[in-house]
Amino acid sequence: MVKIIILLAFTILLADARKHHLEIRDDIRQYIPLSTFGFYKGGHLIAKISEFALRIGLENNVFGLSLDKTVSDAMRQNTDLHQDKCFLEDRNLVLPTNEPALFFIMNFTSLEVVVNCSKNWRNMNVVGEFKSKHYNKIPSRYPNGSYECNIGNIKLTESKRNDDTYRFFEFKFVMFIDTKEDEGLYNLYFHACPNYDPDINKNYLLRFNADIEENNDGNYLSATEMPLPVLYFMMSLLFFLSGLFWVYVLRRSKHPVFKIHYLMGVLVFLKSLSLMFHSINYHFIEIKGEHVEAWAILFYITHLLKGAVLFITIVLIGTGWTFIKHILSDKDKKIFMIVIPLQVLANVAEIIIEESEEGSLEHSTWRDIFILVDLLCCAAILFPVVWSIRHLQEASATDGKALVNLKKLKLFRQFYIMIVCYIYFTRIIVFLLKITVPFQYAWLDELFREMATYVFFVVTGYKFRPTTQSPYFNVRDLDDEDEVEILTQTGYNENIRNVTNRQMVTTTSVESFNEDEKENLISKRESSHEYD
Image (tube, rainbow, N blue to C red; front, side, top):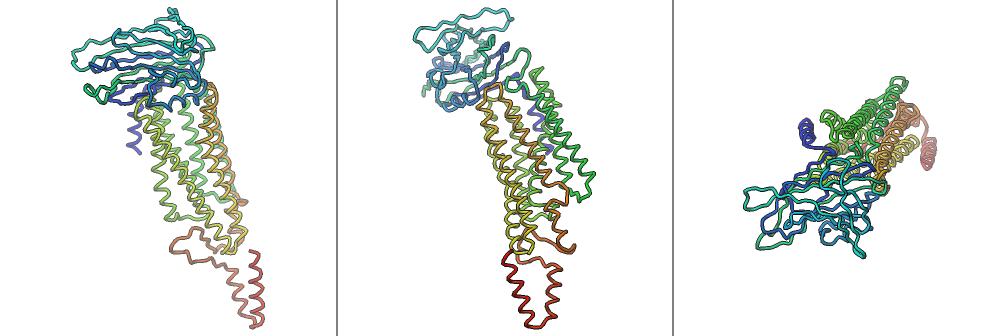
């Protein structure tokens, strides 16, 4: 765990938050997503491509950027379906929904960047330098019947170096959002359309730097993220107050309080701290464009601990630990050996995704790892609950305590349904909500995710609170204190059944009757079991 925290701290020091700096080295991708940002009126985008290495003799290849505007993130998915195509050559591919788009094509012969746009692109303010708010707009011309409009050219600068293999170029542009009609979710991509010449270069490797700054009139957060600092703070306060109430319940409880109850309280406070540090982290990004490393590290430490404790708690409740049994079976231990490392890996992947640049190779790699590992964790934690349900079903038919076991079976089934609903809602429903709502409401996915987590915590705490009304504690009220219940069957106890004192007394008393009375009593007992 210490090594993981040190690695994450090093990763955080390399990240630049909303002031992006991406270094592409020896990359063969033709399509690289650089940034996605929601702009309001008064915002601006500054993008600079530098250290672009072009192999001498490949000046006819097509390289450049595309900037498209969408209403929601679902529109962006259409672009991702054609990653093997060159949008700069076939621009209809990037406009499956007739969304406006801008194209920056690098011309290495005339040393300029030709800026074209789709027919529905507005007269946006795009310039080559960000000098002041008093800038000269490059007028746009819309040829009749054309799908393109020429906005103007941006200077392409070549860096003079003593290199016989590569030529190095750079260019910069700035876009201003001046009207409410221009507000939207903007996606910036880099495109490489090399005309491969087998005699010169079979596999062209990209090398360049991308520096991007996005700002909403002094706010470095995207329009999709602006409410998040307040949201995380309010949810942190709600979880903290709920944790205090849980401690009050445990302290004033006149019923047995087990270790699992205290672990549930620790989980709530870890969740509160994680949200608090997350809120502070976003606050500094909002005002500075980058986070403060100390707060970011605190958030990631609490986030890792919270994720691990959450899955540990779910598994322990699912196995009935301390409620019903004090020893975990071999199956339960194997689940812990699988779930805990997977959950730690999932949290590490999530942190790397957040800290790495969108266009880097590790970003997409760790995103796929996170999705896979998170689904495996969610599936694994269901097994202990399923096993407990199966054992309760078997016990209700064999051990003579059908009523109690059926109550516990109902409780476990409810807990199973709660886990399934929580997983589906926070992993699938929330994602669908995020990509379908308008960009300015995309933060609602975080609101619904945190509210679903809070409801899951509250309902779980209510179901398994320390009280005699819980089916967990009704066992000892129905039988003598010397009774031992075995729920989890292993190789050592699969043929063992519970024997109660009541049964022993009944058996002893039967011995005092004569043969006819014995047969009569036995037949009555057998007929009574028909209703079990």
